[in-house]
Length: 325
Image (cartoon, rainbow, N blue to C red):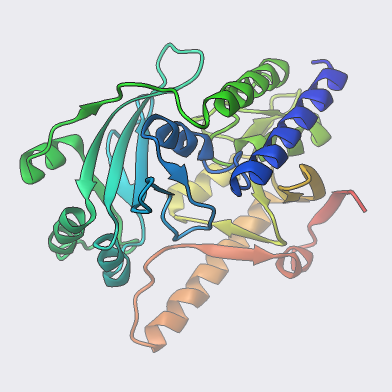
């Protein structure tokens, strides 16, 4: 790996994000698979909506808003997921023009392609979810919608993407080009999905290599030791869907790396290294306390999710191994 080349490419990607924000008002185009929303909007002549989690994804020329859901061909789950649904979120969908259920073809291609989709009106999907979720028992309140369900229960057929040229085309080309070069340098595929790019920035500080998407562990060192990475903008890290299987996986890691990053400046601010046994013990303790609190209120824990703060890390003597200050 040529460190100078990597630094130059990262700066190019940073500049692209800055320019994209200045042009379209949309920031953080690197995280949470945002690139796929850009691909979808580009092909459907939609305009991305600057916003945050909970806001709609895009609008058309008349201002009608759309929600995007996508899955990739390489995914083990060939359906679209609604997480943490509630009566409020389901009702809000009724006010949406439509939900775009998109398929991303990422098999044997230099970069994934948006190739087909279903367009389901907000009212139809809202009514469907209201009925389908009545019997949902999982604590997380999560439901998957499959192509078969859309076709058989809503009477819709898939639409083939007719073109891929739009207002974001030149931006997509440049982003993909730079990201692809970074992937070659660092040996990690899919850096524009999930939190992968920020994990790469952290790994560069530690001499680790981030595993490509779908890997069991997040990163490895030169000796072959495995690591779990948690990367956040602030000083609190979320551990989601905590189960015995997940905790056992953590115990197979050498350490757990917790990092703070600035996603505007592409800066790694702090890196902590935590003992896996201490983290697992703390997560078990906090989850028990959470269940106890909810039980006293007559409630059930919907999601086995725990956040750890810097104070929590200090209590288990976690080491700060890097600081940009």
